[in-house]
Length: 186
Image (cartoon, rainbow, N blue to C red):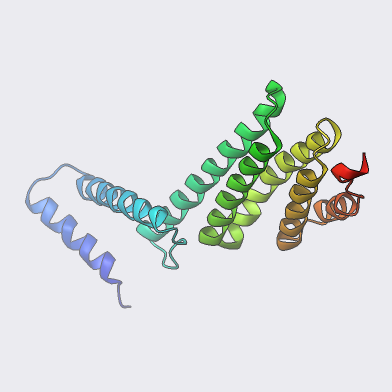
């Protein structure tokens, strides 16, 4: 049965380690350390270039995929949490500033899911949905920012359709179907 090249190199490294009287586990520890450094460097490059996770598997490919996915999710969740926290703190911003915040979060979300693919989109959607729905309701009900609330609801509906979330699709259709008063209606 043929052995893979990595297994041959590892076996060769273990043999050399024994010849040099290296401590037990030194080869595995060294390989893990090299893989961690390579993974960190590749993750930094992939994030800077907004690249997706690698298609290859193994110690580097799997670790890189996990690191990119978790880093992007953490970043998105922090942004959505800050946005929601403003509401809970009672911070009122001008409508244009609320719009800018939404657009920045939407752009970060879209960039992350473009790089991370369908799996990352499905993982990120629930947090975006719960925060976005809460903010859209607050902007509609408490701030009378109907157009901004509608834009958030429309985006959430589009994302719900993309990930196939039936409950979110139903609510999204109801929210997007609401009459949006204009400033001239008053």
